Image (tube, rainbow, N blue to C red):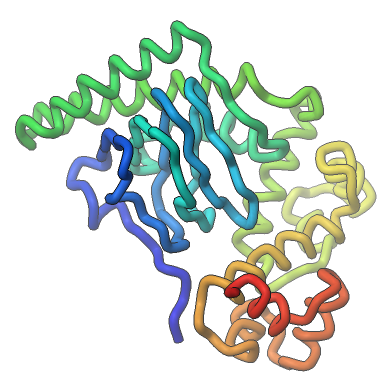
Length: 280
């Protein structure tokens, strides 16, 4: 059984922060698909690059910032005359307000362009952070590095908040419920795909849950749940070597024939065809 590779912060940094300045050849970039248990942030100083995140390509240009949340499957595709900073941060160092902003952005993601002031601030912080981490690893440096990473994360969160789509719900109560629904869904989608289960966890009716999801994503709760389930199925089919039976079992469908039938109904293609098409 070969599951999607998971990169862990504990294996990379003893202070919860790491930063790299990437130039031109980007030979150190990770080209194979994987997940992280940490946040990854970056700013394009010049040139461009392409990332593949959960079956969507993102073309990033000079002045744009990117971030990848824990658990998203991603890989580096290519770059042109690239110069960029990439910072990874332990999720415990990202404050709750920033996490909330990032979660709200994920409801309707879009390109994030920094203004000139934010670009200068972020590059300055990244320069200092890079020098600090290269100089030594004593307790004081770790402490300062964590605070520099927090400052950089807050600047990125500020930019994300300003760039959020107008389609994101303005009703704070509905937004909070939608985010709670998404968190519950990520944790339980492999074992429960019934809207009533999630409505009960939110202490709302199924009718109200449908209203929340429809205002946020333009679809029913049932369809949203199935979309999340299909996304995880696609990840497993393309980025692991497990059999259809093993993947179905992990996703809560013990009968491989039913798994094939359900996946085909939802995507229009069989699991084996989807896997072969994306491995070509």
